Image (cartoon, rainbow, N blue to C red; front, top):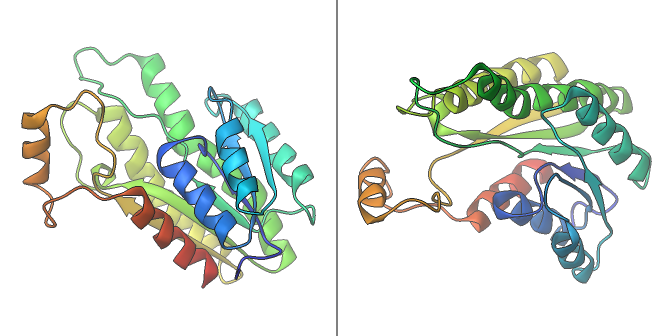
Length: 226
């Protein structure tokens, strides 16, 4: 229970990787505030409470700046000590965006969720962490942010920007606040992937397999406990 007494805000915590991270941090003793958007959040909140830890849900559309700011404020208000000790920027939009059909509105929404929202959370909560004497910020990255793939231009650019944001924040908030990025390769494949798509993808992965949620969650836990 090395995170006992700490409060963690996990964005996009209702399912997939975000859910796994939220549960892992709860198992380590943290109070978890789970951000959700379209999902109810009831299932992840129940799972956290079954582990014996407190859980709270905050809802907001991170493509809207005012809602992102509100989520940060509500999370702080729900925290046991009135402050967030751990921020996990996990929420992200993903989807194909061929250059021939990508729209400006799609570009803006992707960057607002995947890049601007993490910046807003880090700016508001990171400043408070530094003033309080310490904290941990984890960014969930993607290998396509450093090695773009065709057909996903807005997503790749947003993740490339998030990678640069991590490096800049690590310097800006040092030494009191530690900022790290967990750069993911394939973990949970898109639902529309067929066998051929999967074979092509795995040929690019040195391990020859996709990762799993537990591996990602354990890595995040390692970084925030250190």
